[in-house]
Image (tube, rainbow, N blue to C red; front, side):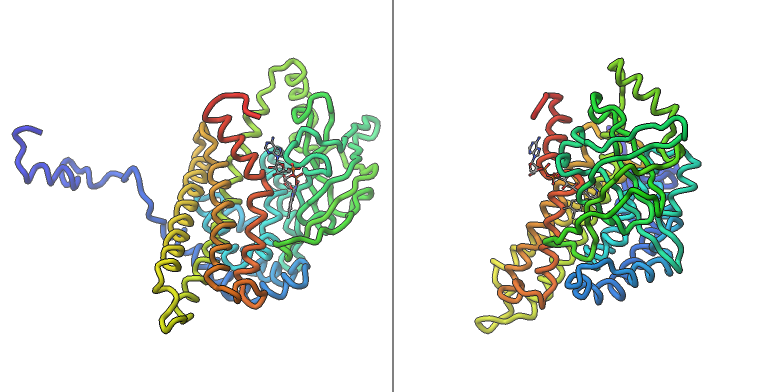
Length: 427
Ligand SMILES: Cc1cc2nc3c(=O)[nH]c(=O)nc-3n(C[C@H](O)[C@H](O)[C@H](O)COP(=O)(O)OP(=O)(O)OC[C@H]3O[C@@H](n4cnc5c(N)ncnc54)[C@H](O)[C@@H]3O)c2cc1C
């Protein structure tokens, strides 16, 4: 430094010296033109097609097939679209798409994105041939779109996945797997074409004895049980699924039998590394779920901000009261903080970073809790109107609540984070 002129220091700082201006910046929050274009495209669909339909399908509590078909027509629903979102090397396109779609409406958003739960399971456990065969079939065609379901939870196995009782028995003579059990809470359960079912092949091994199976459309022995009537996300179908001697070909075991046998042998010897692999799978998928919560929170915040500027009491817009304006300032700050955690974890997942501090869980936990809090604040800002079904923030609040429950409850996220940061056996 010593002896350098002011001009030399400025040249160094601005990168004008030694051609430093030509090199890639190492940190950048600027979205690429592709990301901006996709965001605008999904936003247009959310604003023009999803929002106007939101109230109707929430009241009907049915899957909005016409909206799914519209999404399929423009390429937003389908495996090519999904592949394009996944291919973004920064990992940000998936959360951007989800945030915009769920900004439109979360119930319809889930009826469009619920299929990706099954796709993610096929992607994480399947062979390349299985991906090629089953992922397109999860979506169906533009003329006849299908949805897919991921069935892991059971009446007695929610947070404790190791308690799964559904069994898979191999019938060697026929090269078939026989599935028996009851699944609970399955998004698209029973109305799906493809179901991905998690079953136990060796109960003594707990979650290390689990395997994932594709149940092809129309397979005998798979029946929808009770449809769940829900607090929110009501345009998305949720139901029990019964498996009664449900036979699927040997090729429907995701990953194949040889790999399963090797994995079971390692687990019996106590040398399995599946725990870390499963942890990584969840950490990679959680920011996508978090981005859905960010979308709901942002929708409620924007609605409340506009309302507060219009609504007058005591002769002035209510936004001119600090109590209202500060609440909106906090909402904006918390939503932006959530998005940054989501983007960080999405980027880490896509670039293969280790989630040493459970950053994926952090993003989902923060975004889910902010969505519940921000939508409640929005109701408060709208006063009596906020409490009615005539105004959308009431629906947004009901929709937001699921984000502290599914894909790992807030308590389970805290468990994962605290174990990761401490290395302690926290229970
Ligand atoms: C709308 C909806 C859609 C869903 N979609 C799917 C789907 O598509 N596929 C699927 O497989 N599942 C799905 N689920 C199930 C969802 O993942 C489970 O509801 C969730 O994992 C929680 O399980 P549980 O409901 O059994 O709650 P429980 O596990 O019984 O938890 C009850 C309470 O106890 C707390 N708790 C439990 N264990 C601990 C612990 N060790 N430490 C601290 N607190 C703890 C929880 O945090 C929670 O507050 C869906 C659920 C809903 C409501």
